Length: 196
Image (tube, rainbow, N blue to C red):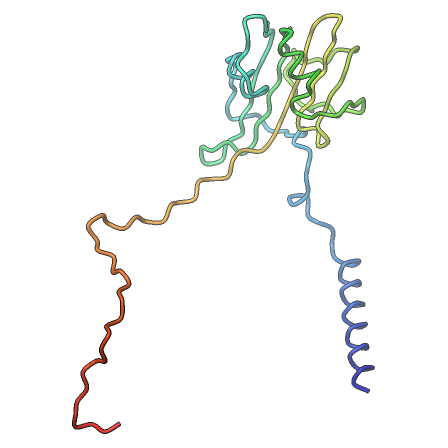
């Protein structure tokens, strides 16, 4: 009898869990990965220093042979902190940059033909019609390489860093912290009039 009751409770629990999973509401759009490519409002900051954009995009300093035609990085701010960013770049690459981005595929991008373009790119941003396309699975970085014209067109996007968490307050340097001590070898004194 007890075994049947235990089995009944387990089956009921499994059914309730299954019903909860099936009927729960889908995750809200804020919780799912939404394409940042559809940002509609204007960026709060615009970085146009080509070398800086190149460094942030490709995690390397441009070489003299890297001829940057256009580059921009956009920042959306919240309380002065970057919470979203996007960059766009056109560059005639050095052989070293082609080796890094295309041949070695340093960012581990996948060959792709189905690419969603950003909704509000700069007017000069246009991927080449021919060549190779590499993109991350979430399309947060895409590189087009046209070997005939020796041109790399790329863009990337992401979210900023989380806000700093305040460090716990430091104890004053002159405060003495008690240390654990060894117990004495003898018993503590007792009042001899008290009987145990």
